[in-house]
Image 1 (tube, helix red, strand yellow):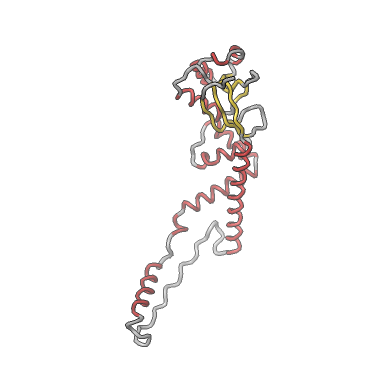
Image 2 (image 1 turned 135 degrees about the horizontal axis):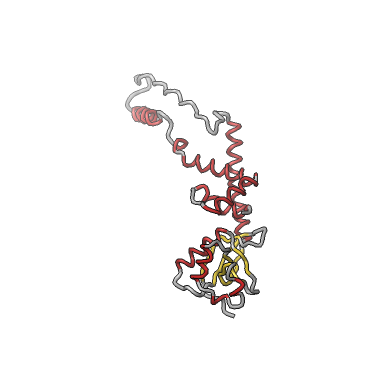
Amino acid sequence: MDCPGYLSAMSEYLDGELAGPEAEAFERHRAGCARCRALLAVVDQMRRLYADERYFAMPEGAGARLRQALATGLDEPLAPAALRPPAVAPPPPPRRRAWLGFGADTGRLRAVAWVAAAAVVLLAVSVSRWQASASTTSGWLMDSHCYAAFKSHPGDHPSDCLLKCARQGWTLGLVDAKGDFEPFNAAGKAKAIAAVEASHEKNRLWVTVKTAPSRGPTLNVVALTLSQPATR
């Protein structure tokens, strides 16, 4: 898994929805990439802060002070200042709670806020760059075991055979216009199996995939659909 693939899987990882080989690839990349590891830590911390209702709760005594202020204001026209009872001093504000272990150190809080804001900007820029660099390709869905036999006529490869080979551990991919086999990553294989199992068209396995940049020959599949074969 490379950095764009890691970024695309981050939300599923934080929600606990990443499993199997894709989760293992995510963990391996996190262990070896300091930048991605730091980004995950910041995003996870921001998510936890936004989910903690304590940071958005009204301070203690706010309701009582508001009622007192309203009562004093309403009494103003009827009771001259000389006849009004002495104002009761409001209770001292509660001690500021520590945030991220920094207590009331304003400078450190500002530094943490700046880092969080920078992380959001970095995340947005990374997503934009990743989306701009994604590409789309189409071809016949194939498994590596049957490629040699069906290379010259990939449209005849049946879905039952493909699913059987996929479950036995063979790599899935597509046969492009040049007749070359382009293997999918683990996520692409899972998406292909799900699409074939859900399809009513069992023997015309033309597939269109959206891919992110990859450093190797494997297609880094982020979206996959079965469609009608391209006409020439």
